[in-house]
Image 1 (cartoon, rainbow, N blue to C red):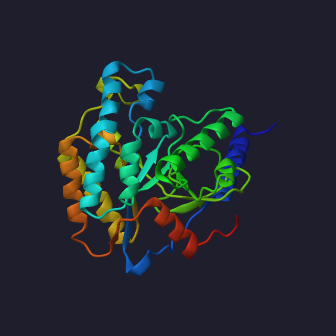
Image 2 (tube, rainbow, N blue to C red):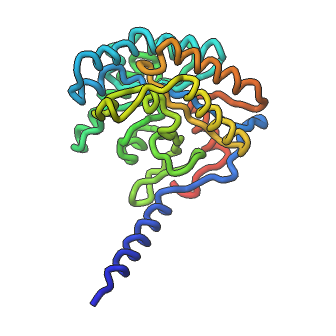
Image 3 (cartoon, one colour):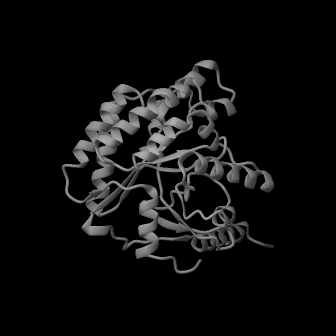
Length: 293
């Protein structure tokens, strides 16, 4: 008779083997020009799209619309004032709704990257391919350049076919690393982010269908302390930080002021690099290429 524990151990071993086949970590990764840390400021420009998909009430939709009409402009102004090159992950539909904001961001040197067509990845492969193709075309039509990065769960094979070089979705490590599909192929750079460095986790209620009692709107000064501590820990290790913002969340005046203070404090330390995600991904590919495709 087979011991159930043996079956469990076999399953764990298979999972570990699969994980190892999919991930390649880069513990000795260094940054250009003697920089000590790379900080990616990223913005998920969802506006009201996710709110619509979840069937949320009008007040939530209005909150999303604020991001497209006001919040994104405040973030662009903030980044430009500090000479930071950010990455704007945008659904393809946003190109139809707020093209002027995307053109302004691109004109300032910010990267416009993929965030799905309407903030979801269809289960049907043909429809998934259609959504990605439409998003790529919409971004290229709007800002004059095809995206090379994504924040999504699009299949790796489809992303590789579409000339993407990185994703910013997996969080298996605190540094940039390589992720492959289940078969061990279709390698992409992954630029990890964590929900502890995501504004929506601190400044939202009724987030993703949760009840109001499940979340609280946090004091910006408290978030400043948490994010500064996260930055300082990675700075001391010579690491990486990916700060995930949403225009409808961090575009509020008090939060913009908090981000301004945070950036000012980061800039008091030597060797802080504020590139786009594309710049980080291309640097990784150049100095630490993957061991296999």
